[in-house]
Length: 163
Image (tube, rainbow, N blue to C red):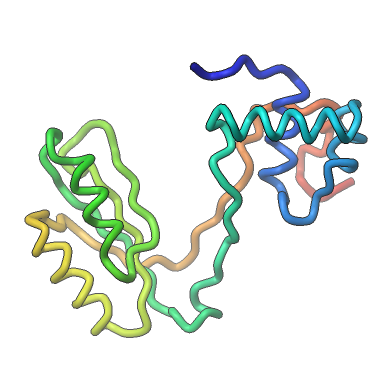
């Protein structure tokens, strides 16, 4: 069962999404108006409840010598979709798999590689699972932002420039 989130929880989540690595519990506490120990307790509770599932670095794959990124759109049987996702995650070069609830094209797979040879290997491995790739696109850039509907207290910086 998911915990009820109050304004403090939402503020903690928002600030962690903005920059979990460089934001201290004291800074979060100052922003949301509670003590640092309360923030630590809230983070522990949110982790235990599965609301916070981890902290992951955002990788610039091009700078990590993986200059090719592609998005494969795949069709899977609705009854086999979840098992297919697990199998896909075992293929070297697949970095993100999104399962879509409805529609024929119901799995989105992001892959990285150094060359078209890598992309061909990944494509072959996907086909070996029995899945069909409906289309693929080269990814230029992916941008992620914090979910801004947590409405953390005191956020009047609508344009995100820090002022």
